[in-house]
Image (cartoon, rainbow, N blue to C red; front, side):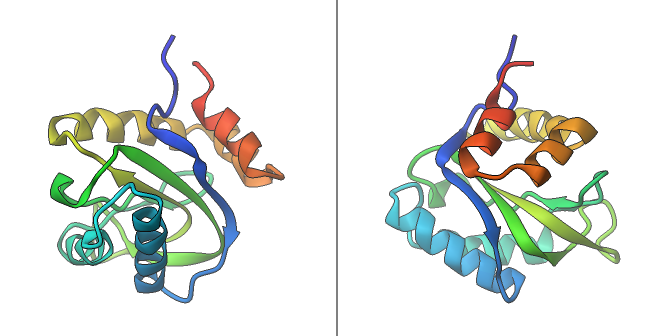
Length: 154
């Protein structure tokens, strides 16, 4: 049995936050992660720059998501932040950067070991493509519940 999302941290599950834009999300989340010691102060700008060249929006069902991340040189401690947005934010689609997705959830990856990135992304996408899991976290009333849903063993 494996945990669904290993690096998810309970204190990094944030629900019903409203950001004015993708840039605002990157800056605010980067600032919070920096203040909590997870990333370097360069993280937010690095997320933004990477997103321009490598889009992270996914047209998953039942809810579209984004999984922004950047190079490990901007990370202090491995973690994943889960953000349930109050209002969707447009991200360019990872598979077709001419299209946009309206992300309702954003999972920000802080990865220290680049060779683990593919495995982390694969496990995350598998979880985020699970209709039952996603509907549960969408309906959940608090961050502890969301954390439990996303980290329980398969």
